[in-house]
Image (tube, rainbow, N blue to C red):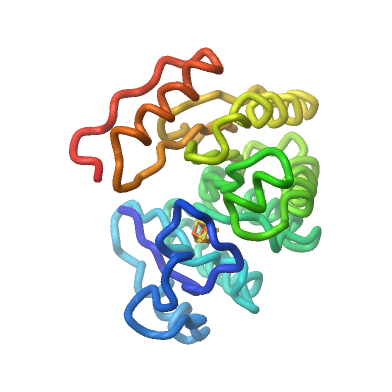
Length: 247
Ligand code: SF4
């Protein structure tokens, strides 16, 4: 069971493909940060629920929470022997991923007081290769800091098995020329670190690093599907069928 406890609905980017970036209010109320007592009670309330995968994100950017590190550490401190959650996943745009935070994530992935695959994966929403494209698609000039942050995290993780890293690229109008350089770049960085990432156009595996060409969900879905299919073919992937029931 996936449980999303959203630390914040604020975001520091305005991605062209994301409805979060197009609205002043994500939940019919001004953007907020979750208070600690709500987070603590939410984590405690997971006790007894079967096979929970906890994700501290829904519509916003979780690392924007001023106490992100404290909250996440608290969740793991409460989770000895997986008594609160079986797995944990983080989705982030990696704009705010300083070295201390990267070290914390690596430390949490290596904890021995719960199952070794508790911290499953970090999903990095990157979506561009060149700085100009990043600024257009993501709405802010943060390409270099994001690449530096992700590369530092990967280096600090070293040979650790957890968390695995997913380098994600939503294929959309405005970035299709960068599919090949994006894939080449992240494959090479991971290969340099002794990793063998899978390249996928479908949901990435939770036990392996991946470079993930993600389908754009939009009003003209046939157009988005065609872009995604072309992107997959350009890097030697068979385009995956659209899942039944996908919106
Ligand atoms: S970083 Fe994530 S939440 Fe923020 S605008 Fe982009 S896709 Fe949306």
